[in-house]
Length: 285
Image (cartoon, rainbow, N blue to C red; front, side, top):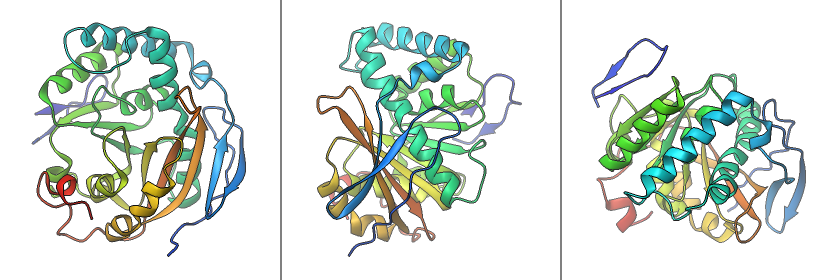
C-alpha cells in the first residue's frame, strides 16, 4: 500500500535508421547551455559543463544534502551505492541525475504537446532514488513515482522522502514487468527514466509500456552508448517508440561525460509486452 506524502491529500493505491534529429532549445529551469554536434551516423546534443546543483534554490540544496547524509548513513548497513564520500556522491550521483533535466525538458516541450511544469514521471529500478528522488527535489511541481522491487530499498526511499520533506513522491514496490501489465500503471506516465538498471534492449521493455502515447523514455547511459542503442532499435520500435536524440552531458564519470538517450512513444505498446518477470533480461528482444 502506498500513499502520497505531505500536503497532497492522501490517495491510496492498491499496490534503418529510425533516428530523428532534435535541435536543442534553451531550458526553462536549470541552466544548461547546449550546442549541436554530429558523431557519424547519429546526431547528438552536448551540454557544456556547469554545476546543476548550484542552480538549485537554497531549500532544494538543503533537501539534497539531507538525502546525501541519509544515503551514506544507510549505506553503512545495506548496499545502496559503491560511492562512500560526500563529495563523490555529489559529483557522481547528484550532478549526473540533475544533468538529464535540460535535455528531457527540451524534448518534452518540443514533442509532447504538454506543459513541462506538471510532468508525471516514473523512475524504473530506482534503487537508492537516483535519479528520481533528485528530480523530485529539483522539479517540485512534477509527480514522481519511484519503482523499486527490493523491500529494503523501498524502506530507505520512504525514509529519505520523509526526511527531505517531499510531498510530490511516492514509492511503489514491484517489478516493471508486472506494473507494465497493470492497468493502474500501464501507459499512465508522461516520462519514464532509468539509470544504471540494464541494457537498452531490456530497458525498452521495462519502461516503454509504462509511458503514455506521446510521452518520453529517458535512459541515462555512459559516454559511448551508440552500439547499445543500435542493438536496441528493434526492441524500441516493438514497444511503439522511436529515438529522438542522444544528448551528451558533461559529468564526473571516468570518461568525463554521460549520455541521455531520449525516445518518443509514437503508438501503444502491444498488449503482450512486457513479458513475464525475468523474461526480458533472459531473452532480450
